Image (spheres, rainbow over the protein chains, first blue to last red):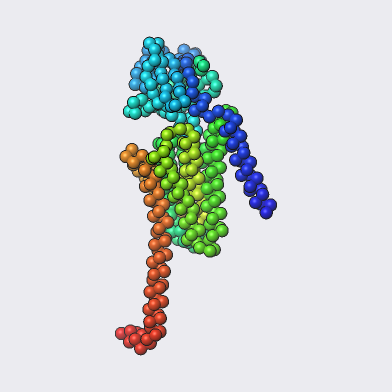
Length: 155
Length: 261
């Protein structure tokens, strides 16, 4: 009898903790919806041999960014507008651009983008708070591996 | 494969069970990684992620990952609970029931994924949880009935054991130890099955999508029915033996003639 109580208490405590945490904090897909402004494109790591302490070594030059992004769906967007219905509107300097579909996978740490049901890209959501988001993606450019896009919320 | 318990199991029983359940675990793990970007047959990585999310203060993710680990634990708990409570009444039923529940979980994932999945985060989290529960049950069953000799959902312990065994095999006395050689055979069979099934799952997924979970379900059905068919065969043979004995008792002269012949 005593053992049953201990087991039930453990289960109830675990379930309550899960409910408390999920109810008290917004899920990643809720946090993601809204308008995000691209702030910077950077390499996640810098070369040890060149300008290791300098920010300029980390920052991706505009020309390189264009080169990296030319094969990406998110090519040359400035604002990303995530809507709750699962659509993403990319807004460029020239005005509204491509409309994509977005999905979150895993525990909300993967952002999958679809374009025209043909192209698919996945980004790792490295950081996601109310006002700040960092996406990582793999690039072969200059063999530096991971590039990151930093965003701030605009609404 | 399922009827025998603990030390009464032969190496062959363990290899059969290990290979088939490793196929199921390997296929489920790779399919879930492709579809949901989450591992579902092992929880070592989830413990590391849980620690990382706690350190980052990402409480929603903490809850999700904690619930996944908890469900794997509950799967193993339920599996062994069924075994220790039903084993004396009906060993086959006690060992088959966790697999039937696992089968139901996998069919639910396959059917829901194929017809209703809209790829929302909540759906993803729930389906991953269901698969972790199923894999917890499978691992609990195989470990429990094989006296912890067979574990097929994660390969950390298995790879460690293989490393130790192959290091031992550098000395002749261990190479000649049949028990150790048998253990190495079992572990190699499990590792190869898990890996091959993972590759197969990735290849099949491109054609079958969520229907790949039906293929895994078929493997589980084979495990369940293998012993059931054997049991039926044994019953049938016993019935025939009894019928022969009673006919011989009823006609002793015929028996004598048969014996003479």
